[in-house]
Image (cartoon, rainbow, N blue to C red; front, top):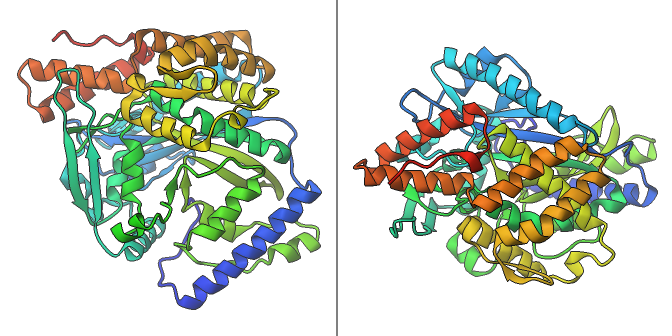
Length: 500
């Protein structure tokens, strides 16, 4: 969806032609996979980080256009809501001390950008869901004023034909109280209340299926030990409320279509794969195009002429199907490559936590792909999906299924099984001992103390409410303290909780 899209009305013939172009794209992709026409000089990782903007009162600051003008750095771009920006990190190799250097680069770049945002009366925040978002902040006029966002909003609501219902049952807080959210929205702007970190890994075509399957196996664990999104519209909901929020805010299905079992566009998937082709083919088979704007290129003719096709239709369509682990086909200087994009993790709490989450994911993923008997041959896809939603809902208190261990707590599973695997995987990737010990050490301590960003937020709000604050006051005070601790840079497992 990063591509420019014109603000226009689509005709039936546009959709028919677009479907035909996507099928031509599938034909070209199948040929390229068979002929091995992909670049893979070395394994590279990339990172995208979405950020919130808040004002001096800790409320959303609808100022991304002004803030981006102040920052004046192409690495920072717009996102869906006027209270969001995105930071794109240049791809780099996994090996060596790259992660340690990246940590320093991220700290420097974010500090500089935050200083520029301050000039516009705003502050950058790395957090999954912004706890101070209120109903007034999710009105349609707060969408970023770019055609692609406006058009996407129109197409989603046209497909659904009715308002969005945000309907979530909260997990009880430490004091035993529980909340429920039921709220209607007439745009996709509620999705801007959440921000994420997307991890990219370039892989060889023959290895893509193993890496994607491994990422699906890990998704529930990532959420359970990395959750940072417990509040939305004043309610304490899931530990990672981003998950149901994203699915509901962008859902193109009416209730009747849901009852029929029509697949949502925010999708975990439904089966293990044997090739990246499986995922692109599912996209075309199951999902109508939201933005059917075909390009002039014939991808098969481009191949015949000795050029790598852009596959514009397949790629744009793929950008409107929000798999939690998404396939990516891309070109650099006309040379094609493939990536797995992991979209599971929330933003924050600190740069160190973000890189620890990334190190754990890349290391455990690599180790799983090299097992003699792959995990996904011993685990049903349904179990992986159940883990995903259990981890999102309950965080460290989830119970997850793992072959050979049965039903197990996330901290026990990570400490006993996955952390040693992640160490092995990072060694195999050539990551230095210093980087490996730093970032996986953070994961170890987070599990030992059972304190994620979401757990800290929930505990802190309860403590502040017991001191006499109402919910909105407690959320603002918690967020102010969150920002102070995040700026210190110490990982979230070390953050103190106010006494109750």
